[in-house]
Image 1 (spheres, one colour):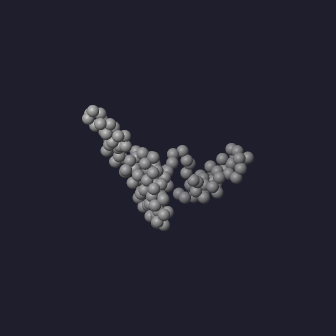
Image 2 (image 1 turned 120 degrees about the vertical axis):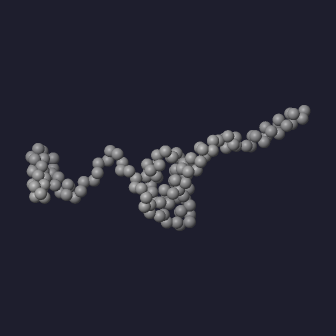
Image 3 (image 1 turned 45 degrees about the vertical axis):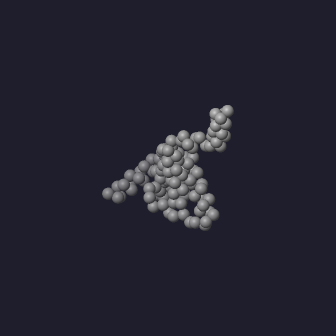
Length: 134
């Protein structure tokens, strides 16, 4: 009878216990905590969440977002201004063409009606500019 009471008492104690937290790998918990800290630092550094993801590809995105969101709420509640990040710039996105300079825009043909004649004129203008520079 005494063994039944002990088993019953243990089952009641374990029912309210979070076994996942007790059996969790500490390395995973550490990675989650670091990712939350990264997200908070990105928000305080006025970085967008997308930039934060691209700068920290190995960190779990859900934890980064959680840290970013918590820091955002904290900064709003306490009226804290962010600090401009002076570290690494995020890498340029692949597949997006660079913006043309003002000179390239001016030298571009005005319409597609010019066809090959417009291309020849643009090539001759660029050759004459190159000769003038030398």
